[in-house]
Length: 119
Figure 1: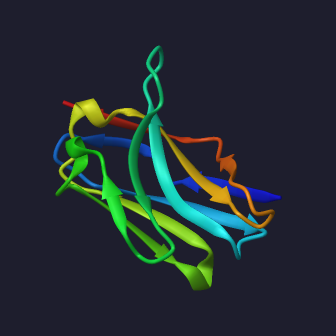
Figure 2: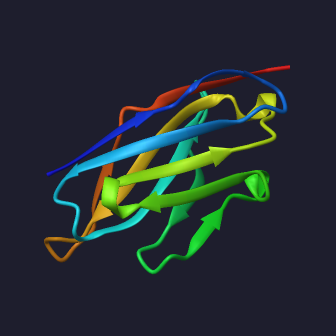
């Protein structure tokens, strides 16, 4: 079993920054990738960024150059540094991962943290 707990959301003005954290507990040895999605009420959940076990990163075009995903293995924590925030970044941000410990991908999600960007 894997547990993901996000934190770091809040209210920020456009142009500001926030850093989201996702603490991972449970079986953490076969998690790949680690990443973030976001969702606006009434819309589909949208991929934001992920970090592969080999260090590769991938971002949705709308956040490239503004968001950075990173990982601290010693703290079992994944971060999403969000700079130059825009009102359209307002959403609930969810941490996710796939657990491969049983040989197949089992997805896990956190409960989300709300980011609100005011204009």
